[in-house]
Image (cartoon, rainbow, N blue to C red; front, side, top):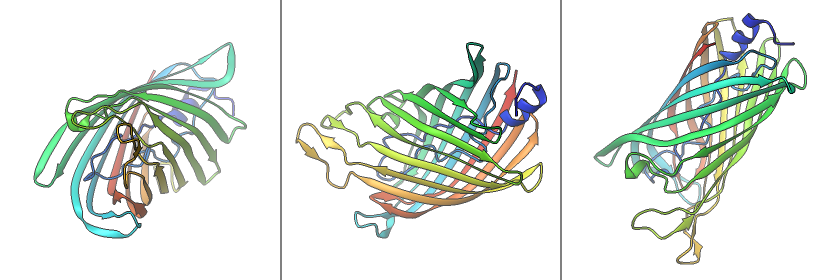
Amino acid sequence: MHLTDSAEWRRLAVRFGLPLLSLIGSTPSRAADVTLAIIGPHEYDLPVDFKPFNVLVQYGDGNAAGSYYNSSGQRKPGQGSHTWAGMTKYVHFRTFEAIPHVGFAFELIQSESYSLANGTNSGGLGPTIVGPAAWFKPNSHSTFGFQTFMQTNSGTREGLTPGYWSNISSFIFDYEWKHFSFDGDAGTVTGSTKHKKGQNPSFPGVVFYTNLRFSWKATKLIEPFLAFDWQNVTGTHDFTLHRDISDSNSREATMGLGVMFNIAPDLSFTARYSHSVDGRNVPESNAYYVKFVYLWQ
């Protein structure tokens, strides 16, 4: 499908807002926050050959972690916390005549967070995330591309400051059938040396992740979907002690159910609940996610 018709690319574009990650460098009482777990169905159902346009996306998620997974992968009670996060994103989409049939986007993302754990609470602005994405369509029903983002090393409070710069890169894909869709991503997060007050310099573990969404186009308005998110983090290396920190590696897999509401050609809302099905050295996910998308030219 050659997306030169304004109504057609608006219909497709509103279904997505290129995603972001939850804050990296979580405290032990926080949920794992699988990278890019916030994405919904059609996240990468992207057009090509379109006029420039803009998207505003507001993400939100909350997690009530009442248990955690130990180093043996056993689920244990304790280390409970309540965490809420918001992420505000502006995206500019455009194409270039010199590179036909390829779409481009540039994102500016600001994260917000609030947590309540062990009788204490904190909140504020987290790191800022910026970066581009590019994609093409192998055929009219599919999309394939690549995205890469840089996350800054600071927030407005110490608890929201990772202490290191990081890069989040992933391959993205989407395939559309008449009544179903399947899309997702797979990538890594790598960081620079971590410097935090009162801690030895360290190299944060490398993150490997994937997020998959399978949806049923029940009606033009309502689209239920299944979600699967997986993440594995290698151990953190302490430069002063010249060894990996014990039990600093982790993994988590979650499954979820959600629904997407295509309210109008330039407006959509998505909600989902997910829970951990496997983990190691990480608090469980018992989380809900929401996403609001607004598009304008």
